[in-house]
Image (cartoon, rainbow, N blue to C red; front, side, top):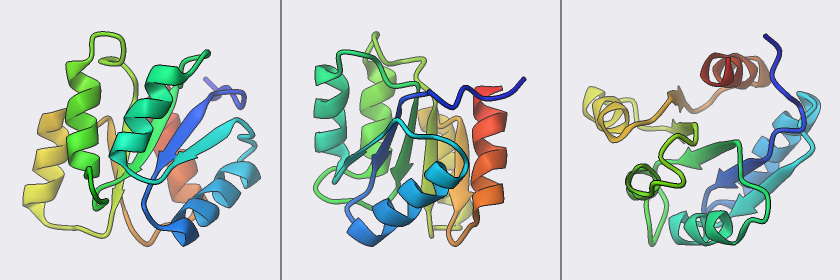
Length: 128
């Protein structure tokens, strides 16, 4: 089943360069409805203010002041967001981090660096 290209996506990362790279990757994959948040707190605020709900969150693991892991736990603790698909993106490759993301409820995990095909495959797996 193809992924809806009108899906509302929220990118959370504290690095402007990564946000621009991700937005461009998503644009090349056909996604146009992409918002950004500079950290986990701003992401939670964006989700709570959204008139139309997000269909996917793609979050970096290492952000300040609220990490992606903490953001994921907040999402899973909120009854209105608990089923929102979340893909964690990180340079962290340790088994402990992968397990922590899985235990916190991440739907997917991508290790940096990655390309558009990897992102496309992960979105299809999570949203399919």
